[in-house]
Length: 355
Ligand code: SF4
Ligand code: FES
Image (tube, rainbow, N blue to C red; front, side, top):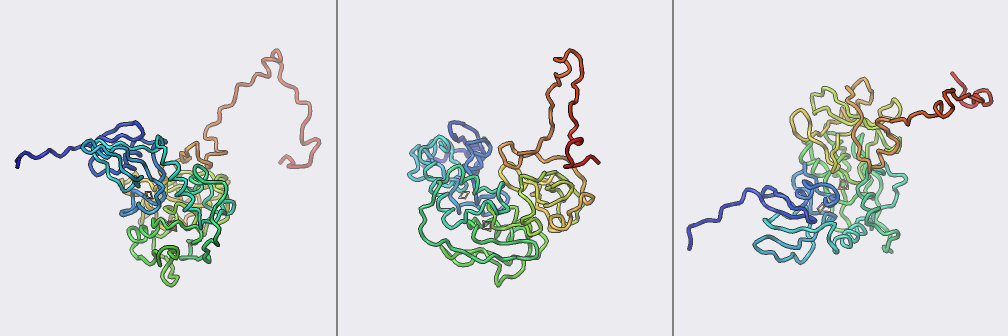
C-alpha cells in the first residue's frame, strides 16, 4: 500500500450549462449556479441559505448531472436536487441546457399547485410570490386534479401574522425561523403526508420579537402580515430603503409607501428573495417585530433612497427612478414661436378644479 496521499484540492471545478467555475469544497450545485447567476440558477422554493437545514423539500431545484466527477464521469441516472447535491471536481451540470429538467419542473409545479388555490387576484403575496412566477414559467393552463382540494380554516397566529394554510407548500422555512431566529419555538409541521400542516400547537400565539421574519421567508402567501393585509397591491407601492437605531435588531429595512403612508415594513431582500446581510455586522438582517409592525411613520426612519428592484419584477412597473424627458422641439419647428395654448381645460370643465 502506498504511503503517498492524494492532496486534497482547495478548489473544485464545476460546469453549469457550459459555464465552468472554481468553487470551494462543500459548495452545493445550487450555490455554484448562484455564483454564476442569471438564467442558469435553478429556482428554489424551500432552500434558504440563511436557514440551517433548509432545502430538499420542494424539488423545484432539480438539475441533470451529466458527469458526476472527473474521476467518475458517468451521468447520474436521476435528476438531483441541486440545493442538496455537493459539487464534485469535474462535475458537469445541466439546467437550462437539459432536455429533461423543464418537464420535471413542470411536474413539480403541477404537484405544488395540486392543493394550492388559484387565488392570486386576492392574495397579498401576488407580485412577489415565487410559486406564481414558477406557475407562469412552467405551469399548465389547466389542472388534471379531479379530487376536492384539501382546505383549512384561516388562522391568526399571534396578533400580526395570518396563516392561510390552503396556500402552504410545506417548505418548512417558517419552522426553521421559529427554531433558529426566535427563542420560543411554538409552531411546526403537524401530521404527515396529505394531512401535514403548519400550525401552532393548540393555536398558541406566536408573540416573540422575531416571529415576523416568518412572513419574509414564506415563498407563497401562506403567512401574511395582518397590518398590511388587503391594504394594497404590492406593485402600487414604492419600496424605499431606510434604517433606524434599534436595540433589538439591525434596524435596516424596506418601507413600502403608498403616497405618504408607510403601508408595510419588511427586511431587505437580495436577488434570490432572501433576507440580505446587515451592513453593520455582515450577519443576516432579520428585523424585530417593533420595526416591522409598530414603526409605520416616516419620522421613525432615516430614509436612504429608493430600493433597487429588478426590472423583470412586476414591482418595478410604474416606478421611474429617474425620468429623462425628450428634448422639446415644438418651438424649433415653429420657427422660434412658442406654442399657443388654444384652450385651458379648467375653462370648460369643473372636474379637478384648480386650487
Ligand atoms: S407557511 Fe410558508 S414558509 Fe411556512 S411551510 Fe408553508 S409555505 Fe413554507
Ligand atoms: S430548493 Fe432544492 S428541494 Fe427545494
